[in-house]
Image (cartoon, rainbow, N blue to C red):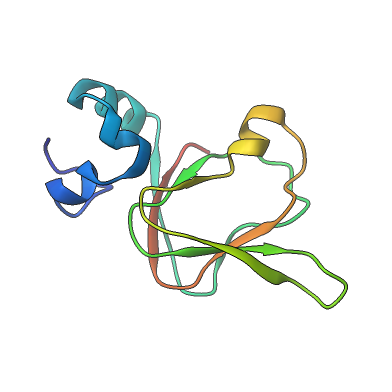
Length: 112
């Protein structure tokens, strides 16, 4: 598997979540619909309440899922390379139910 603009090394691509189950030509097709994005630590990729159908796959760094509470946003989970997010709104078109922000410098290919 060759390197792409989304991955630093062949081994990173091979570990990238659902892509690990795909053949090279299938990976090329998926990434052909993607747009590389970088996020600085603390930057939001998704805002709660937004209507957006972008789907994200993390290829480097990490994100946190922030859910709204009466005390303010609270971390619900941590997302790492190989994981995807934004899939619920991608499929159902409803408003985002949580914010997702980077807690380290990150890279994602997105489709939106």
